[in-house]
Image (cartoon, rainbow, N blue to C red; front, side):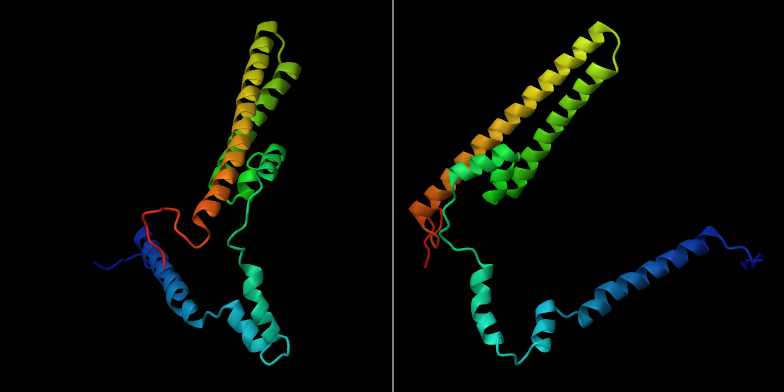
Length: 182
């Protein structure tokens, strides 16, 4: 059948156009751009090739980027960082997922506690509603404080565990005694 309304576009024409543009965009992004891609290091190597500082930089760059293998973690510092910022000690110990979880739970509990305290002290008129909001605020504050203290204790214990693993197994050895290393 021939479309008699040449000026009017149907929905299927729009869908065909959008899918064609999507295929074109994806093919450009995944086929053409990676071929032309060049890393920053390659670009810097071409730009500064032949400078007298290149050899010195190449020798020291690896040392500056890598962390020493036998770095001992201070449990007291982990506790202090977790006390100041919930999850801060876990960031210091490089347990990022645990740090984010503790931070979000603690801040959420403290925030809801502050919100209900504000509502109880400013917006409520009846005494029973005010008491219930104050009790809820106190309960949420206690929950936030418990999560905060658990985060502090966990940071301390994780720092001790990391230090013990490095002492007993060393930096180059496997933490499992049943796996042989070269």
